[in-house]
Image 1: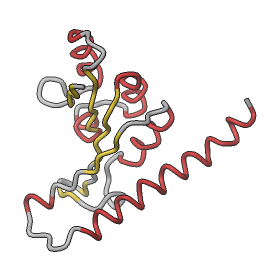
Image 2 (image 1 turned 30 degrees about the vertical axis):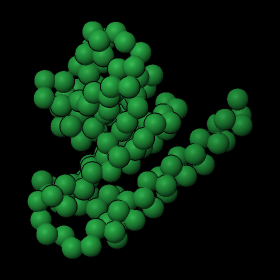
Image 3 (image 1 turned 180 degrees about the vertical axis):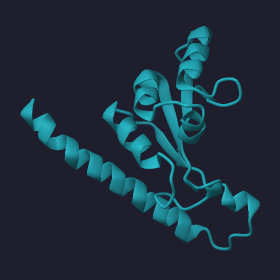
Length: 138
């Protein structure tokens, strides 16, 4: 598979979807970086619905102002992204990006990454339990 990430001239989900349509190949798939899409004006839930069938990777980042921070401690739409991806049946890879690791001497990053994994699993469990009553009622 070739996975194309939104960015540059293809920041929005709509533009990424159009690029994938032009490629017109089942092995050309999408990687949606939610922070990039949100900065470009995407509604995250709409982006997940739009890209869902072609989505292989979802990238998460969290920031406070313009500074990276631990996942769940910032102002980004990371939780909304995970829940929206789960709502469309996404079963691909979630990637957590912590850019501070590249720009600052951060010491031991294991606590940040462990916390991110726990946060993501918590969000997934919360969204699953919230959706369960609806599924049972159907």
